Image (cartoon, rainbow over all chains, first blue to last red; front, side, top):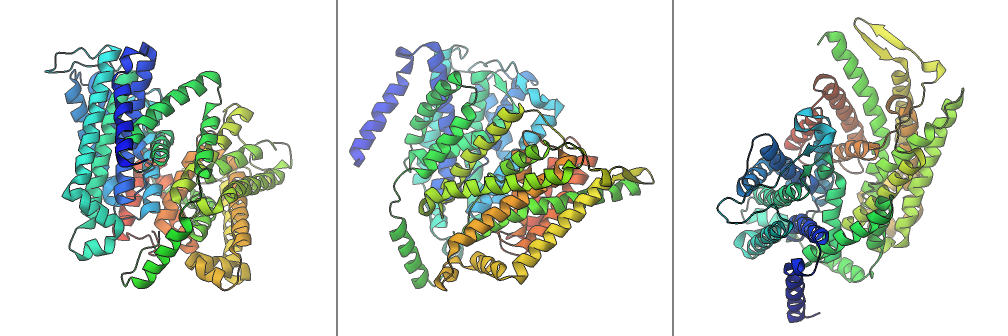
Length: 322
Length: 289
């Protein structure tokens, strides 16, 4: 597909999503809103993977932290403003992401993958046992808050859907702008050759850590929205299933920015369909993952390997092993 | 805490660390050799542990451990066979590996959930290692000592295999530079097969040995996997010496965390990771990629 055609397709799909309340019932609108939330998770994973080649298997940590922060804000601290709750969620998550980012920025891609999953799982087992945050029962009764200065009532499914859509579009624009910015350029430079960027005087670790924190913030927005959507935050929000979903969406959707969101909506509908038919839907999802991993053409592997080998021969800078 | 308690937790941590080494060594070898991220490792442990708990009869202990080892080997070879369907596509693409093995992990866990109703099960300690040793106000189960000794013996056998045999030399060469190994005329396929089988065997035996202590319960597929990850990142991929030291450190950190900070025990593990990586960013012996 050429560029204008894909732009047109994305615009059409975007319109179809924006007009969803006009042709779907209340339950399906909720599903689209949930799909948008997963789309945000996918976007945050996409950002790190495509700009820095860092595969995160731990975005559940940031998603869950956002959900728990919003849940605690509403149920324990009496916050009744969605912007305040989003601020708390993103702030808490970014603060908690700092040590993870500092460690992860020192690792290569596989080390990053392993350590992010390890951190997320540790947070999950912490949430399971910590009674102060509800333990394995999670936090219930997260009522949808007021919209502050905006004259809308977020309690209804349609208004909440549009609020979620607005947040998704804002995050999309933010990540798009970051990719186009000088900061994004430095990140791509780091992806291509960390050693050279370091030799040019860039503080590679700081840039990587900043990118991880930014990505964590986007995932936290998704977490807050999800907690309000289902009025519930639980250790499930921190589980590897959430991280895996973010990663599989990015792999399915390719390298462009908009498709992860659309694929997320499609996958949400698919999951709902499967889980309403069978109890063992997790195994079916697992088989889907296996099929996705094994399917597709074995394209351009050999040329790329040869190109890499040639570059390694010509390149005086020692390349890190992939 | 009394001194006896501190020593007790150290002993518990070391015995658990030795067990973790069995689990992590297989993971680190497949990772170091093929660059293969095998997320099913925890699920292999889980299913092997469940199989072990089926042999509760008298004298069934040895059978249980062996059956767990066999289960682990079969499952690991199954993972290898699935990967082999699209070897060129999966090898060298860690995202594909993660999706593939995470999918298989979900399938394995679902099999365990359906077969054993998701209930935790346990295996009684064998008669020859029942009871506990008492000293001061602490008591150390005899079985843990036996488990540590068995794990240490297996680790020694693995060390011998790796350092003293032709097969081990090939594996080490493959970890260092697989292309060069293949260029000297060694076919990497059989070595991959053997290492996958070995890694499954070790994970299965670890599950069997641990069954009287940990039992089998849903959630283990992640909890042990996370510990293996931490060990591999700390020790460096493919580095058995690093994995051994990291296993002991993780085991001890886990024991002290659970004993003295029961609610927030995970923070001791995170603190260990942060501290070690701040001190040695590339793993204990400088190999983490």
